[in-house]
Length: 346
Image 1 (cartoon, rainbow, N blue to C red):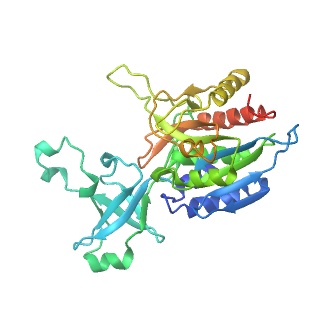
Image 2 (tube, rainbow, N blue to C red):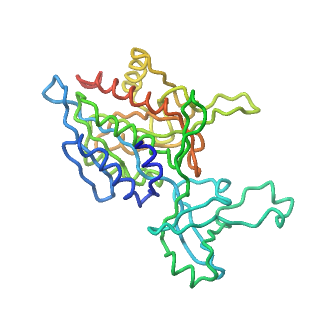
Image 3 (cartoon, rainbow, N blue to C red):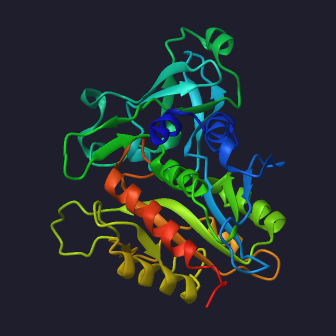
């Protein structure tokens, strides 16, 4: 399964080549043109197949290839490594996690003091990431330098696998934000659509939407859809609070986040399509985070944009959980909605 392959692939922001190669092989037979730009974006063009107009809509659909991770910033005398976070990572999820470092996948464990040696008053506080180290089993700095270099990326050592809930068809894996969106975009490229489709698998989203900004300028689209794996906090809480999204309730449409406000025509198109086709969907009920749409909608003279996402529990952590039902419903919703764009935007 494609999601499994690209979830297991390593692609911390700025080092997306492994993910990009898998995706390029997956889409090659469905595209009229493929190129990789200076920032590492994979831009795939598929000419309109079913348009009834002489000038089909130029639609950009993006999904980012990169994931949050770590980068080696220094060596300690005892052979452990200092590191920095690439993208937004909560220090609470790092302690005792296993990682793979550099092109040779050197294994390591993120270490801190054992609980037996931590003062009682400190046990209730999260450990700051800058106080953690990566232990690769080296005995001193010289030994560590033979295995690892400054600037080497480290990603979480997590593999994809199905969970046991048959109804949700839940799976766990690394980097569903946004390998879920990448999977949806590959499936869209298999469809015959009435638009000139520019499928952009973007780089460096987690560090500032950088790839999408460059790709949108080059494509100059009439409209855009950003695909994501988004926040899901649907597990029980002590406080009665509406979850941002819920696993199993279908794709989540964003009407606003910190990076953009969605174009209302596109929001209406998605919701009306979902209703007409009987596809479950939901709204992302928090104006939090940001997506590629935040950069795309500001390109050139402006681009009407919207974000559609697969709900994922525990994003920006070593492992996430999603429902394959939601993933498939996202593909169905996008394909059906784009087929309604034959005459452009209403």
